[in-house]
Length: 154
Image (tube, rainbow, N blue to C red; front, side):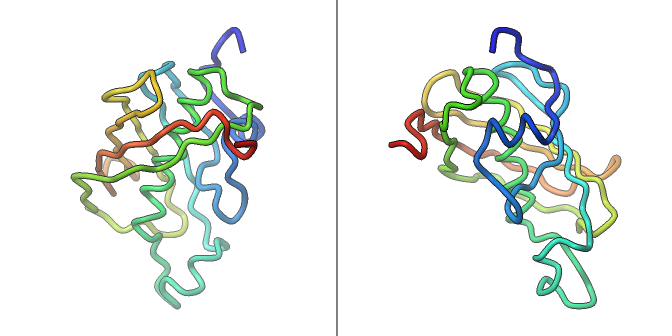
């Protein structure tokens, strides 16, 4: 890619990261600033498989899936920034720090997933993540990821 897009629809997301249903947690990404930041969007639907067991009659999006959605948003930004689309490269989670959950996320919510690179450019990146619903914070954390350029081929 010569020009890095400032947004990504589901088609570009699926070319950039290997996740698929039921584990693809982002619907689109906007405001992409290469190697710096991006905002992912997840439309939370009652039809998602985790809600049949978490919790029956009281569906709540598991916190670990909010963190995963933040990580997928960062992986998309990294993939675009390093020209890894269609390369088979994979971004792996390495750790989570300073994580706090502030609000339940339920079906019907639109989760906005802001990621900012704190350190990156090479193989290991560190991010600050903030997940919000409207003007309410649902989750905030820092996390690290590693780029494997070999991906599925390695």
